[in-house]
Every structure is written in structure tokens, then in C-alpha cells.
Length: 279
Image 1: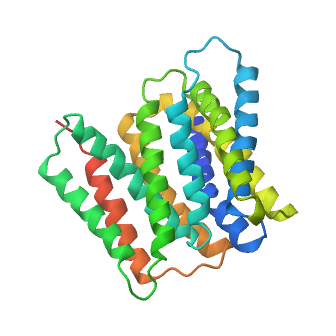
Image 2: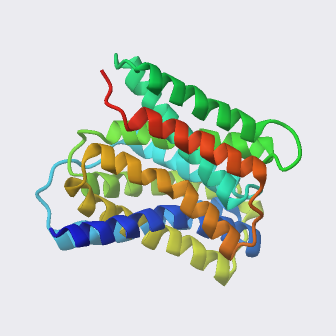
Image 3: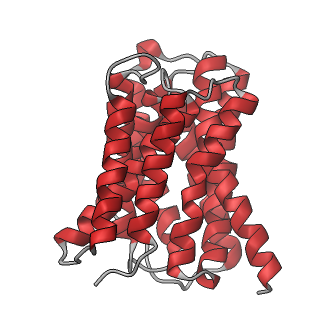
């Protein structure tokens, strides 16, 4: 694959990942759909698109997904949706990103990896930025919603760790989405009294599942084999930045000094960790 095509695919995938935050926040703040219904429609449409992509590509690849990975996927998707009832897109993406990366780094340390002094300083800087973002005060995000997003990030981090070596990434992802759909439907049934639909909200949910999740993951897994591990980690640092800019441009969200300082600390700190080789 040519370098130019890899660059284009990578940019599209990163835009899709950031688009998940923008679509979810737009749906829950500008339409009447409820968070549980958004989650169900997102996972259902994502599962359908991923299943179609796997069928079009042809079978024979390894990996089918698992119940535990699907449970982590569902926990991420549900926490993500309910958190965005009250979180701005930028703050939500930043908290999610920080929680995902911190979880994966913590698993690495637990498994025996050791951090160099600069990496340890980066981890402390990122943690300080996350604490600073969540401290009570003017412009602080609502703590219950922030806690839900933290949980979603931990779940996605666990999902990502479990996915390493599980087989063909696209096929495994499709299998996990299919397994997560019944969990989301059970949640919707439990909250049926609060269910609410409208064309705009349903459209946002389907776009989030089919386009920015299903197609987005397919594009990412197409480009990933042609990226070095450090490059793949580095480019993902741009996702919360893209989401923040999108929130300001399309959702009229304010860019506060607290959010800007926290963004620099979290993204910069994690960059110190993942862009230096571990011993």
C-alpha cells in the first residue's frame, strides 16, 4: 500500500473515532433519543456493518470474539452514551482517552513492564491533568458523568488489551459487536419507560454505529499493519484534540482554560509514556 493511501486512511479513521463523541453528544443534547436506545442502535448498526464487511472480505480468518470482550464493549458503549447526557464532547473525549491509555499502561506495568523516569513523569503528568480537569470548580465537568466516562474508558482499555492476539481484528470486532447487541437490548428493555426516539437521534446513532464505529474500525485495521507501533500510538493522541475542535466548531462548545490545560497535560503526559521504548 502506498504511503499516501496509508496517510489518508489513518486520517479518516482518526476522524471517525473523534466523530463518535461528536455524534453521541449531538444526539443526546440536540434530539430526543435516550441514552439506552442510542447504545442499542449504535451497537446494532455497527454489528450489521461489520458483519457485512467480514462476509464481503471472505471467511477463513482466525478469531470470533468472546463473551467477556463483548461485555467490556457493552460497558464502554453504555457508559459512553450515559456520560454524554451531560458532558461536552471535548471533555468526554479527553477523559475517555486518558482512561483508556492509563488502563492499558497499568496492565502493562502489572504484567512486568518497567517505566523509565521520563515515562513515569509522563504518567504522573497525565494523572495530574485528569485530576485537575475533574476537581470541583468553575467549568468542571459534572462528576457523575465524568465518572461514567472514566468507567467507559477503563472498559475500552480492557477490551483493547483482550483484543491483542485474539485473531483477525476485523472479524473479532464483528463477533464482539454481535455478542454485545443482546446486552444493549436488555438494557433498553429495563429502561423502556424512559425510551424516546426521533428521526434525528436515531440517525445520529446509526451513523455512530455504522460509519464512525463499523467503517471507522475497518479503515483503521486496514491502515494499522502499515504503521509502526509507536506511530499508531502517537497518531491516536490527536483524537481528543479533533473531538475538542469539532465540539467548538459544530456544537458551539466553549474551549475553557481548564480544558486546554488538562488537554496539554494528559496528551503530553501519555505521549511521554507511549513514545519512549519500555524496558
